[in-house]
Image (cartoon, rainbow, N blue to C red; front, side, top):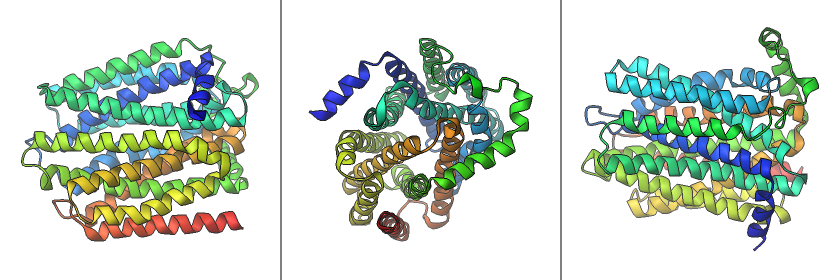
Length: 419
């Protein structure tokens, strides 16, 4: 199979294997950590979670860094990316261990959220560094397309696997969320260790572009951000892909909150049963991510990335309401698979467009903007869902609105391609 052959070629590249290993360990730790947070906020017996509470948690964890993300990207283009991966994962190890201690001590919620916010902030920084570094460990556009299919999707699957590990630990009798968080901290530490297999200068940027003095880098943040946005504006195809990906991420976020509430209140009689149902739904969506990784490289050989994104959005526009309006668990699982496939396929396409059309000196800034849009769309979706969802998560209006946004995105992409 072409996918197997291309994968074999990529895995023969030592530096690619090292970068991929860092991503897998980092994102597996993310999955463990995020599920521990979700079970603490949503499925703890003493907490009566609501859509508003979930939206508030997402805003606290994601929105502050999202607004500061482009400024971090300016620094990412001035620091050695290998060092960002090393020290970022070491910092997350310490912060995650601190979160575990706070859960055990049963501190006020604001202090717990402050600790979790710190971990998630560094998380977005590391992920932007991984994406910006990918073109440095492959050769040519064809390998880059395959690497964009494998790496982010494998990372997403690692996040899913980490979440599954956390679910399994809880269902197996580990009652303390703090123990699960410690497991995530251990995986962050392993990711830091693997990053040492790469030389400090391997992942760029070039030494002539490095600005080692933190004060000088911070002083140029505003100017660098404007330059990065101007560079992106000159790449209209990349800007169109980012806009479409933001819309699709919004749709995915809104339906994620709906599924959380359905698992918590509509489909299960207890917190443990709801947690098990949510774990299955996450796994099915992860299978959709894997299918996207297999299909997308072959599709992009024949079609332009924006055309494939339009097809994915159109597929979701048709199937999401057809399956989701039943609010039955089986059809919703099929919808989770379809949305996982279409959203991840669109992300692979967007990554490829951005990496192939944005200059290396600007990639860190552009991917930081990418992360900002990714997170703001997710938080915005949670806020909209909080306004529209009843306590049990059944809202036909939300499902229809999501379908219409998918359809509008597909239409806009095809019009852009024709122009």
